[in-house]
Figure (tube, rainbow, N blue to C red):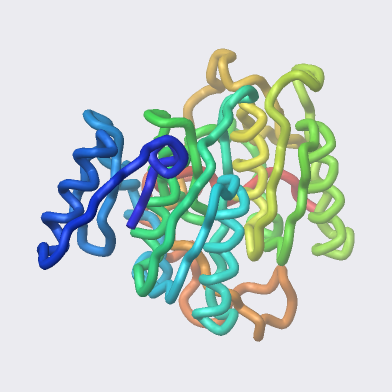
Length: 321
């Protein structure tokens, strides 16, 4: 059963009844509390009168193994949104014996204050648990190929913040780099970019050099970057860093140009990811190694003849050697 914070803390109910069906008793209790209830597949949602139903969330880009993974139990009492998401992340790893990772990327206004989460759920699919958590917190979510993006209510949409400029040289070695772990806590955009640059050099043993050119200075009052992810490709990490910082990027011949998201877009030659959330590949020879079997790139429908890639962002980039 799901209780919004305003109901959990402020409503009083007095009932003394016997031999009454459960749903009738629930109806009387909700009438006294001034609330409505909705019987859903996996839970009964208690809402303030005339409030919108929980956001369904777009999970089409997510790995089905994660979407329908069963969560045995979730118990939260006035927990912050971040704590609830961390608990879900850990449940996915535990229930899949470490075979699956789910990454959350939170992009909320600087002054946003999500509602605390109070729920008790048992034997519920991952997607439904996430939906109820986000509904209580007053946020929306949308599945991206490598993460689930948490946004302000009404802002959920695919991330399209990267382009490749005509004539740019693409180095496939960089696009194959996968960060086993990224932890960034409230960093400015430039600090986050420096970390990505250093990690890319470390993973490639210095074979690939990443050049970033920022067209604006860091604004410490703006959105900061916070990431805690696993098994994230370089370009996915760059995309999420720019997204959280309200920036965009364009791959040029010798550098990646970073600019504010509200500036005029670079010449269009953009491409978007269309792949599921990835499974851990613990048997790879190295984190930058190409997975065995069918190439990830072969799964992409062609949209750009120059790149042979399609649907939600880039996959190849600029530096050569």
